[in-house]
Length: 325
Ligand SMILES: Nc1nc2c(ncn2[C@@H]2O[C@H](COP(=O)(O)OP(=O)(O)OP(=O)(O)O)[C@@H](O)[C@H]2O)c(=O)[nH]1
Ligand SMILES: [Mg+2]
Image (cartoon, rainbow, N blue to C red; front, side, top):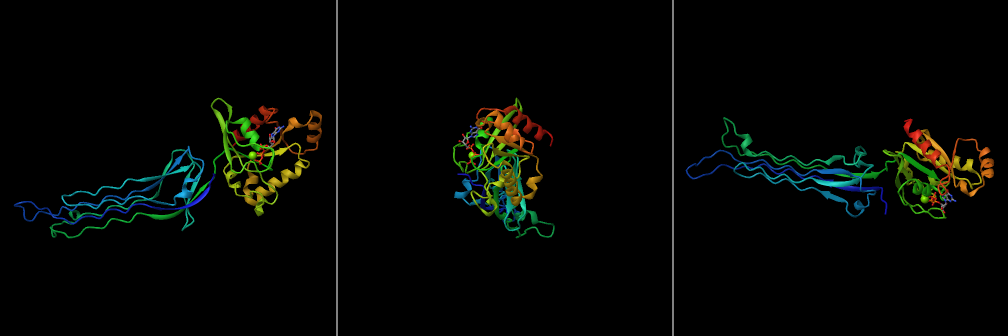
């Protein structure tokens, strides 16, 4: 299952209290203050883990609490600090503070670690409060509370290229043909129910990440089909590739429709660089292809992902479009 939004509660640990204590020893009746400091509470830290592709784990567990620091004790012993706890998040996760609406962190690179909730500092033991006039202070400070936050975790996939098209247009077939990803492919609409990512290699040491999202239909903005719920996954792509089936009887209307749906979700998506790909061209004769495309006013790339016709042009166009940015 693919989960791209969850709400969780995180609590960092409280700091341990400082200690009031006095040194006692045989024949040393009035030893000075020797109360140690409290230990620090554990932080809650987010870590971007490239092995993860979903926030599914957080469906089942919503509360994360780091331990409290130990209180200080006599003989100047500082309390033990509590260990930090880690939330492992898929790369592309945005974290929002639900109380303030503010963006707390963007886990946009594998391996980055960001403290989400800070543990409280330990309190000071009475040793800190001795002075010339007060040799036996009875004062220590309490540990500070750890931060407690309600957070919204939202996964927005990070890909260079997003494939957008009607259901059954052939998007997953393209991803499967140009990457090692193995999305489900079938001859009916809505085969793809969740986004898929794949790495497309242009040549050695040069590649891009391609995202195949579920097909869009007219009225997706009103929740039809799978609606807009997956469009957020192309919000962070650098290039949008519209995929249109050559057997579509009104290719230009389809392109218009796809653009409209993107526009009603997020108008800035239409400013993004884009390419138009007419696919499944192996299903028509070369003459028909010429005829159909002669009427097509836009720039396009003719492709058959199955017969790998036009594959080089397709890859070059993507590479060039990405290089331009
Ligand atoms: N002949 C031919 N068939 C293709 C080509 N590309 C896709 N198909 C077929 O078209 C059908 C739909 O392909 P998919 O890749 O599942 O389409 P999709 O756009 O991912 O569809 P949804 O996931 O439902 O949105 C499958 O039966 C594919 O085998 C192609 O280039 N040539
Ligand atoms: Mg698909």
